[in-house]
Amino acid sequence: MLSVNNIEVIYDDVILVLKGLSLNVKQGQIVALLGSNGAGKSTTLKAISGLLKSEDGEVTDGDIKFMGERIDGREPEQVVRAGIFQVMEGRRVFEDLTVDENIRMGGYARRDLAGVKRDHARCFDYFPRLADRRKQLAGYLSGGEQQMLAISRALMARPKLMLLDEPSLGLAPLLVQEIFRIILQINRDEKTTILLVEQNANLALSIANFAYIMENGRIVLEGEPAKLKTNEDVKEFYLGGGEGSRKKYKDLKFYKRRKRWLS
Image (cartoon, rainbow, N blue to C red):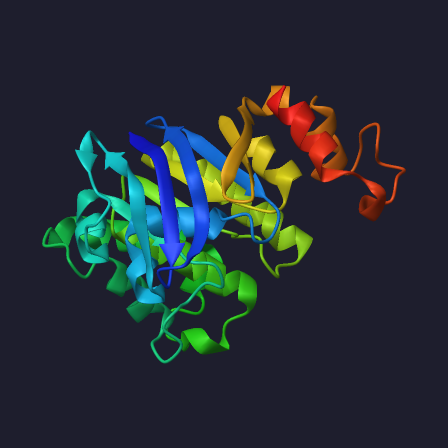
């Protein structure tokens, strides 16, 4: 469904962030993109959704194809109409609009009124606590409720591919579990393909069909979650275990980890 081919991304004409990054997302899957802060995960999503321009970034090499058509260089609204919707890190809800109005904004470009009404009700089926707050201003919701609202707004656009950027960020563990359960349910019930950027590697790998790990703007490891969980580097640096778990992080040599990943 999605093919990112050897792309480079530069900010402000000088800062190289992505350095020949490639990944693929198959239709119907949940694909996780893992990595430390600054690895380039969010930049990857913005390159796909067309939001780089708002931050003076651009794809300077390679290409991005969705459903066989090239989309790098398109405006964000064109990418949304093609079937891709990004749920931004930090929720980004419309704080001065009600919950109901926020959800309806997700279907703003749709003209199938019966479908919009059906999907609007469906959002409250997935997130019942939003139904109780539908007339409340979004700015007064908790962080978890705002995340639910952001996902609901994305669902209203009927995306073929949903890009989720750090949905667990700043949330209590029980809320994170609930949101990830619903993400998995959306994937199964709505047949929505999902590219998930997440720092909670254990949780991401528990729902993903395939996963990539990024370091410094490149993919350094990829595979099925069950296989990645047995990798010593993944266990050591992302899952809290492995042969080096008793070492101090600052004493580990990055080149040794990279050498193992690339061997």
